[in-house]
Each structure stands twice: as C-alpha cells, then as structure tokens.
Image: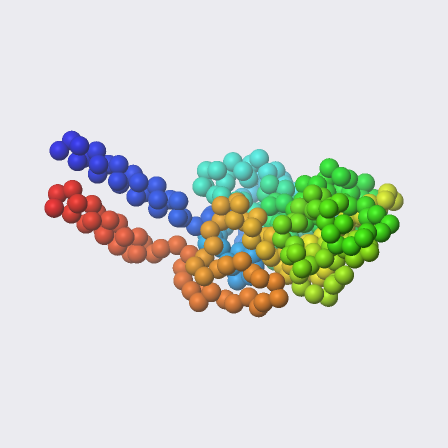
Length: 315
C-alpha cells in the first residue's frame, strides 16, 4: 500500500509540473495611470498584432505608484524614458510574471528598451512603441538614424555587436562576386544563417542588389549614417520595419523576431508557424481559442487523469 501511495504522490506531482510547463507566458504591465486606459488598449493591440498574436501569452495589468516607478528621461535624451527597474522586477517576481512592461504616466512622449521595456501614456505615442522597445529587450537595435550627438553613445562596435539585426562591416572597394563576399564577411553577419544561398550579399560591391524585394539579405542601415566617424552599418531587410518606424510592422524581421521569442520560452499557438518571406501570413484557424484552459476544462483533465491513475493502480 505504501508503494502505491508513493506512486500516486509521484504521478500527481508530475501532473502539476507538466501543467505548469504548459502555462501561458505571463506578461505583467505595470502602470501608474489611474484609469489604466493606455495599458488596456496596449493589451488589445498586442493580442491582435505580430509578434505576440502568434504566441500563447497572458497579459495582466498591475497598478504601481508614480513614486515606485520613478520614471524620467535618461542620458540627456528627452524621449529616452527609463524607470526604477529593480522595484518593477521585485513586483514581477512576487506576481509570477515572466516579463514585465511599464506604461508610465510620465507627461511626455518617450520609451526605452532594456530588461524592462517602457512606454509613456502620451496621446501621440502608438501602441507599436512597446513592440519596438520589447524588441530591444530581446536583442534588436534601432534602424532609424541617430543624431550626430547620439552616435557617440550608440554607434560603437561594442554596442552594435549586441544586436541580432545590425552589423558593422566596412566594405572593400570591390569583390569578385557573392562567393568572395560571403567568404570574407559571413562571420560578421548575425543573421547569416537566414540568408538563402540564392540571395546574394554582393555583386562587385557589398550589399544585396534587390532593395524592393521582401527577403533577408544584407542591406545598408541608416542607424549610424550621421556619425562623424567612418561606420557602415548593415541590416537584414531592404524595407522599413518597426525598428526604423514605429507603425511599419515586422516585415523581413519577423522570422528573426519569432526565433528570439522562441528562445525566451514563449510557446507558439496551435497553427502558428514561421513566416516564409514572400508569402501572406494566414491567421490560425483557432485564433479565438482561449490561450489558457478554462477552469472547467482543467478540472475535466484532472478528473480524467485520476480515473486513469486509479484504474491502473487499483483496477
């Protein structure tokens, strides 16, 4: 009998652990806006737009005081609004949150990336700002041109090398062809494994020669074009995306973003697969299915589990 009780305890533990493993990824949105309107609108936006609409995510809004968040401009850049991340991280830990976001009631247009992405409640700031800032959190850099003064902060080898969508490569005067360029520069391109063999990264000069096609290659980025130093930065796509313009969408970045989110432990919804560039994304047929089981569905699973368990042990 003792051995059977041990088996029951072990299997029950395994059931609860497996249930936890399949729980939705939890994003906590911490805000000091009394009405929480910006946060509520943000949740709806994220649920219905890439990249979050492809993943099993639970969004929960938590109130936090302005004093606790302590948000304000950083590095002398008015739009770079940061907050007291330690207090937010402590709150997130207590709430069982996988990733914290901050929607600050700070009275200005702004946001920031870092371990906890931030956006303000300013009426002119679009919800896609949070996607842009979150992509910083998972390793993506800005593709819009920094001002000349900002380039001294951000356009350094050390900074650019942190990003999965940017590369500093000083091109040679000429190349004998694509093979020559690949031999010389493949290890300098973080997304090189996503470039198809039929997509050239050079002809006689460096750069994919198809700027109007939606494909992953090697294209000049505007990031450091205002730098007084000689710095040539490259990016994966030829079109404008959310890292350059907030309302531009994912475009060629989408496969890279999906991969980054996979690595963070987010689980894709049923039917959600990698986007193949050049093909139209289809909405999964189960888009309206709840991301977590209802309480009835869970207890039904639990009942079936125990029926099966006792049948095996005592039947």
